[in-house]
Length: 217
DNA sequence: GCCCAGGTGTTTC
DNA sequence: GAAACACATGGG
Image 1 (cartoon, rainbow, N blue to C red):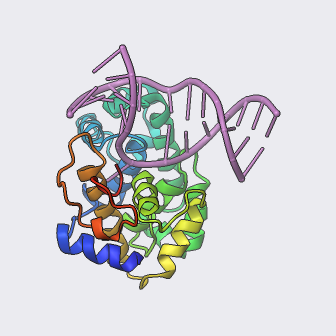
Image 2: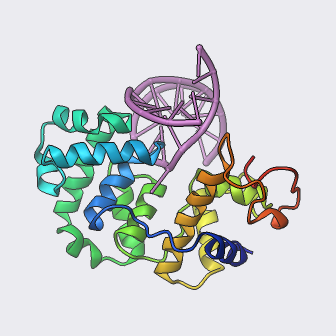
C-alpha cells in the first residue's frame, strides 16, 4: 500500500524538485531551520544568513553565536537553532565535509548525524536523503497523520519502525524516497490546512473512514 | 487572540 | 521509555 500511495501522489502532483536550495550544505542548514517551522520563515532566515556572509561551513562554525541567532531570527527558536547550526558545521568540518561524510555507509552516517546536538531522527534522515542521496524514508508529522488516516499505522509506532516498514516495501531508489517525502509534505500543505486545496483528495478512496474531508482533517 | 508549522533537548517519573 | 515542557517567529 505504501507503493500505491506513492504512485497516486506522484501521478497527481508530479516531481517536487526537492531540496530547495543549492547543494548539500544548504540542505543541512535548511533541515535544522525547518524544525517545527514553516518553510516561508526558513527562506527568510536563509536569505539573511547569505547576506551576512554566513552560508559557509567555516564562517558559520566560527561566527559569534549572537550574530548567527540574529540572522536566523525569522525561522523561530533562533537561539536554539544558532547553537544547533554551529554544532552541525563543526561536525561537518571535523568529518571532512561532504566528501568525507559521503564515504560512510548509510547506517554509520546516520549515527554520526544523530550524535550532533540538535540533529534528531527526522533531521538526520532529511540530510541522508537530500544531501547524501541515500534511499531513506523521512517520517514527519504529516506522514504520521496521513498514514494513520489511511489505517496504515495504529498511532503508537516508533519513528524507526515506520521508516523501516516503508523502506522495506519499496525499491531502495534514492530518487523515489526523495520524491516520496516531498510529496507527503506537498499533500500535507494542501489538505492539512484551514482551507484545503482540493475537496476531493487524491487518496480519498484509500481511506477506510473516508468522510467529507481529506486524509488528515 | 488562538492555533499551527517539513522537531529536538532536558527534566522527571 | 514515555510524558511534560521550553524554545519563538509569522501566517491564517
